[in-house]
Image (cartoon, rainbow, N blue to C red; front, side):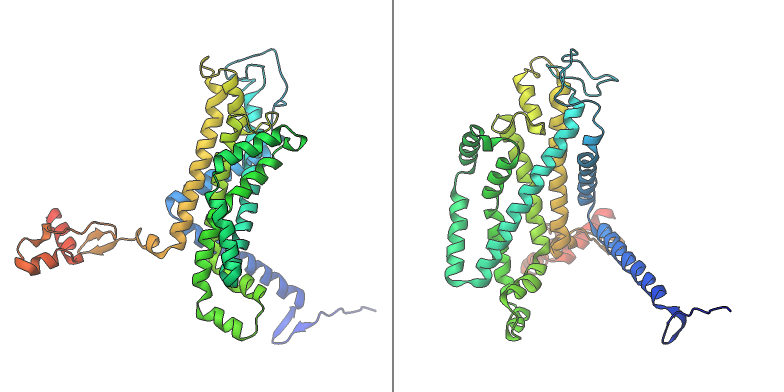
Length: 367
C-alpha cells in the first residue's frame, strides 16, 4: 500500500508549500541588501572609494597577516641589518629580526588599538551628547561642563604624564592603558558636535509627536534621534580612529608605550634607537612609515566621502549642468565685472552677479 504525503499548500498559490515560500524571501532580502550596498557604492565619490579600498586591504592584512608571518617577529638571528632578499622580504633589524613579520603583526596591533579607541570614544560621545541635548536643563549644563573641562585639558602633556606613570607599573604592559587613555581624552570633540545636532533634531515635529503618544525617553532617543544621526556618528568614529592611529604611533615612537609589542610606532621607535636613518637602513623605517601614511590617508578620504554622501550641498557640488552644450559646475566662480561689457550702468553691474553672466562668459570663451 502506497502512502501519499501531502504538504500544506498556501491559499491562492497552488502546490506551493510554506518552505518553498520562505526561501525566495530570504534570497530577496539578501538581494535587497546587496543592491543597497551597490547603490551606496555607486554614490560614493572617487576619493571615498579609494579610501575604502585601501582600508579593506589593511583590514585583510590585519586579519590574515599574523597567520602568514614567515618568522617570529621577536626572534633574533645572526643575519643583522640585512637588506631585503628572498628569505627576508623587508630585510632584518640591527638584531636580526625580520621586518616583514613585524610589519604584519604591527598593522594588526595598530588597527586593533585604533578600532577600540574609536568604539569607546564614540560611545561616550553619543551618550554624553544625546543625553545633554535631550534631557536639557541641569543635565545639559552639567554634561556640557564636563565636556568643556576635557576640551581645555592639555591632551599631549596629560598623555605623556599618564602613560609615563603607567609604564612604571604592571598595569602599563600591553595596549590596554593606551586604549583607555586615548579614549578617555578623545570623546569631547564628538560629544559637542553630536549634542548640537541632537538639539536640532529634538525640536522637530516627529519628536514632539513621539512624546505626545507616550513614548519613553529611551525609546525616543534610540529609535528617533540616534538613527537620524548615523552619518554624523560614523564620521565621528572615523575621525577618532584617525586620531588614535596618529597619537598611538607618536606615543610609541617616543617610547611611552610598551616597547615589547610590535606596533607600527614601536617599529619606528626601535629603528630610531638603532640609528637606522644614519646607517641608511631604509627597509627598517620606510615600510612602517609608508603604512602609517597610507592608513591615515585612507581614513581621511573615507571620512571626506561620508561627509559628501550625507551633505546635499557637497553632493550637488559634484554635479554639473549642461547649458548650450557647455558644462557649468556649481563651484565655478561668478565674474563680478567681467560680464558687464555691453550692459552699462547699474544694470550691467547687477547682471554680473547672475548665473547667466557666467554662462555667457563661458560661451564667449569657446567661440
